[in-house]
Amino acid sequence: MAVYLGSAGIIELTRTADRSFRSTMDPGDVNPSERRFSFDFPNGTFLTGDRLALRRVNADGTSSAQLLDFVAPSGWGDGQQHSDGTWYVHVDALGGIRLYNTWQDALAGSPSAAIALQAPGASYTITAELADGVAHCLGQIADFSISTDRDVADVTSLGDAFRQQWSGLISGSGEIRCFWDWRPSRCGDVDGSQETAQYFHQLILRQQLGSEFKANLIIKRDGTVPLDDTLPQLASRTALFYAVTGVVTNVGLAFSPGEPLQSTIQFVTTGEIALRYELPSAYLLLQEDGGKLFLQDSTGYVALEAAL
Image 1 (spheres, helix red, strand yellow):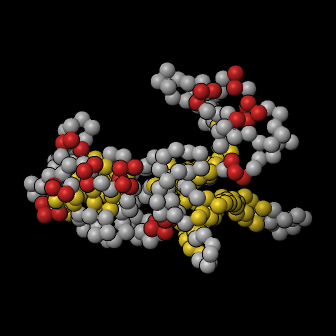
Image 2: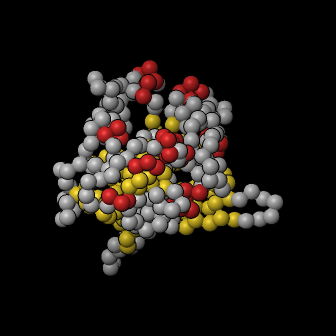
Image 3: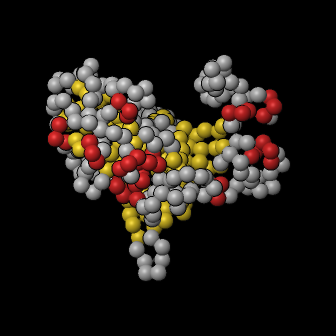
């Protein structure tokens, strides 16, 4: 029997939100020389590293055909201004915002790397909402847990000899413990910047957009092999993980003299809980456009026989 170690686990975290924010963009809100702007939003609404979708709208809230003209043409991939766009943001201590093309640049917050801005021609209404970002590894994890529960309803009728139960809705909850950190660095053997425990401390305080997030709670990573496995090559090519959307309900920070700081994050799920078992794309049967070929019952993908 193969034995899996907890060291094969990892968390992939994606920033998201289910609400948008509406405000007014004024010419005086933009400082082109500093590549910095601001608009009226409560402190903590947006966080450094968020992927923000900005859209120009009419007074009634419908999408406008007029341009989002405070962002210079170089801020779009095609070099032309549009009525909406999506960028990563860096939010400074005074609530000023700079736009960036990459998450790593947004975390660094260098003014010279920010997207060029220009003064808008007039005041107009905009909406800002979080777009799903790229999944990043959550660093400094000590341990995490997840549990799933199903409600049952008692449907026993008078005269029944045995109690009858009817299965109900499924819910989930979990807890993550991390060594507290606020600087992006290396996450295990994964290169590149990482999400830190500090993000959850900021997330739970966000009132306008909520404290929702998406995560893959990976039980076994691709490339790891369990102890005493009889098929190590196959085991190395597979991954097993829970895919959830959750809301942070509690964040704690434990202090003890001489001990490292630890964050405890508790969450509940807000939608479907999927337990997925996948092969890497190199072992999947792909369509002509490179997409994965789904099974007819949508329970998985079609794999090549060589993967077995």
